[in-house]
Image (cartoon, rainbow over all chains, first blue to last red; front, side, top):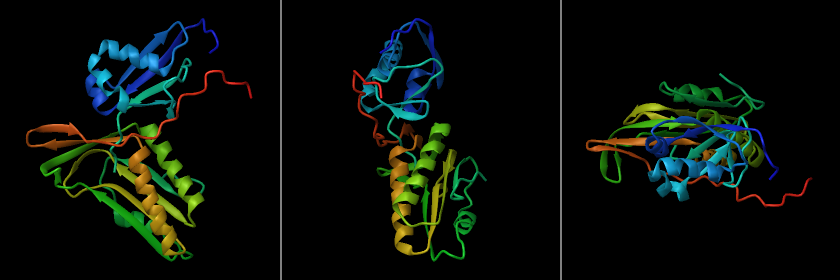
Length: 88
Length: 158
């Protein structure tokens, strides 16, 4: 991972029961160091401990594409935490 | 209506879905079959009477995923056109939540593509439903979309 010195600012979206647990659908987060999606989620589980229970069933996306948990974030990214989907 | 290279239709709507119109719009003289899937709200879930459902979506990503399904079925099957529409918001018992119409010169491709499309939608499109009962509401059990595995640490520059 390349060293990052400037601030990384990302938009964070929650859906379904994750939105209920986080209490909001959209947030923004700022980091001064390289950060992955996993670390971003950890920030929210620290704030909303109930979220941690669902970690194993959550899928993350970065810029509207499913993304691995170790994906590094870039400024301007839109990250979403998605519970199991139930459309149809 | 938004159209794509194949003249397909992918929409998220908040009004009732006009299933008859959609089934008609994919038909053309060179086709011999239209297969449709009409998914609608059931009056019970696990033997509990349902009052209504409320659907929400990650709309920008859901539309992207729906278009991907369209491209996949054009690659896999000899079909002509696809219309895929999902409704969001509050839906009453019996109302259509998702409708897919696939036209093709021959029926086998249309059946296969329509089946693949609804199965893949249910597994990969970020849409969620909340089920409302007499005594409360729950988010429906869903399916986990296949997510990419962790990326290799030392990624060689390509």
